[in-house]
Length: 168
Image (tube, rainbow, N blue to C red; front, side, top):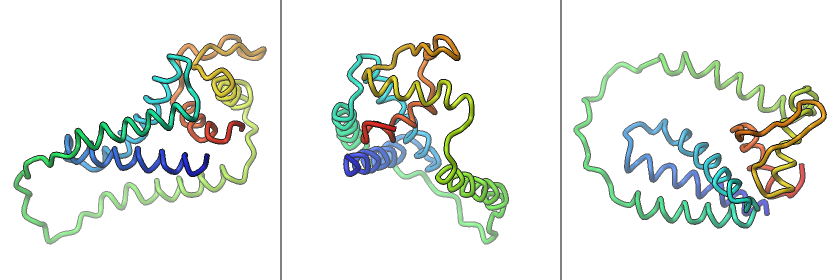
């Protein structure tokens, strides 16, 4: 199952590159399409109550095939601006601190157990509910009442990593 998860990540990342190459100019859209595909595919399966690992793998393969068919044509090259002799430091100044904070937070999340109230009250129970019912439905908890009128992207991204294992 972990090989299937790695395969799904590779297919969606490759599909994102193909779609960005075909339809967009900026490569920064790859990450946006990557996350949107993960959330969108799970939402589609959850609506029809068929959200299982096998179905997610199948629809990911179909998404990859669609991306190969649609993204195979190269767009006409637009004239590129002449290269500048000066190096632009603004992206480094803006994104280096964000990357450092993200790096620290990622490793902090790996070693720290989940203990926040909202995570224990409805974020993780919602993922577990979707995992058990194979559907994106309403979850009733004694702490929050009905939760899940719309699927949250954070919960769907958590489900993406939990679904291949079958447990949290």
